[in-house]
Length: 153
Image (cartoon, rainbow, N blue to C red; front, side, top):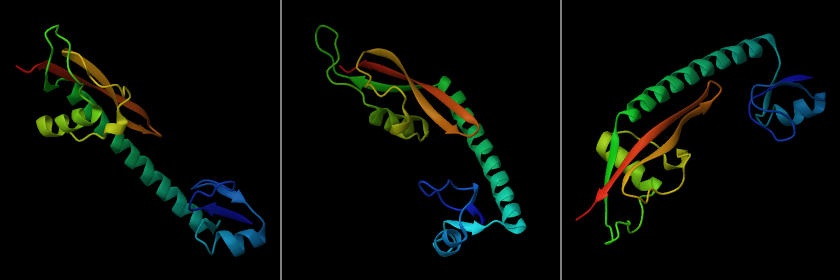
C-alpha cells in the first residue's frame, strides 16, 4: 500500500514522502492516527499544491531576511559600559542585551538564539556579530550587526 506521510514518524518517513507500507500497518495504524493518507491522485495533487505554497512561503521569508541583512549593514547598536582605570570593561554585553538593543533602538526583532557568534561583546569600540537570519530550503542568509560600546562616565 502506498501512503503519503502527513507528519514525521521516526523510522517510517518524513512529512510529504510517499512510501510503501504493508496494508495492515497503513490501514490500522498510520491512517487512523493521522500520520498518513492513502496515495491517490487527489492526495498527490493536494501534496503538490502544498509543496508549491511552501516553496513560495520560503522565498518570501528569504526575501525578508535579505532585506533585514541589508538594513543591519548600515546601523550601529549603541551601548555604554563601565571601565576601569586601565581601559578594560567591567562585565560584557550579552546577545540577549544586543537583541533588546536592536528592538529598542531600531525596531528590528531578532531572536538571541540566531546569533552565530555566541560570545559576549566585552571590549570598548566596535564589535561585529553574525546573525543567521534565514535557514531553509532556499539557502542561508547571514547578517552582521555592529555593536558600539562606549565608556560610561
